[in-house]
Amino acid sequence: MARLFRQLRNVRPWGPADRLYETGLKEEFDGRIKAGEESVIAEIEIWFVRDETRRSAIESALRTLVGTEGGEVIQSACIPELDTMPLCEVADHKRRKAVHARRRTDQV
Image 1: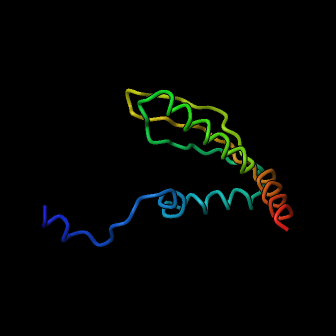
Image 2: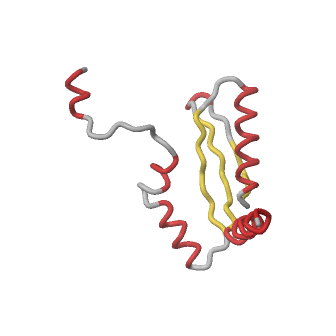
């Protein structure tokens, strides 16, 4: 085990930025927006939670967050056999810009 840890170069918490920035996904989304696409469909995968009440609360909170950002969850699934809980989101670029513009004026 000690040998394994000597091989590590960078230890840090894993997070959403790893999926968004280090995979080129952000650049792809930005390119679609520049090309005139008004919305982009994305899949969000949530860490699977076995407790149904907690799982429901997590999905509800995520739906609210996506809606707050101008997007919409159009489909969700719970696949206990695969320990996964994917959600399909539509991120509407124009709606998101309007939400952020409204927030800026509310803060003034």
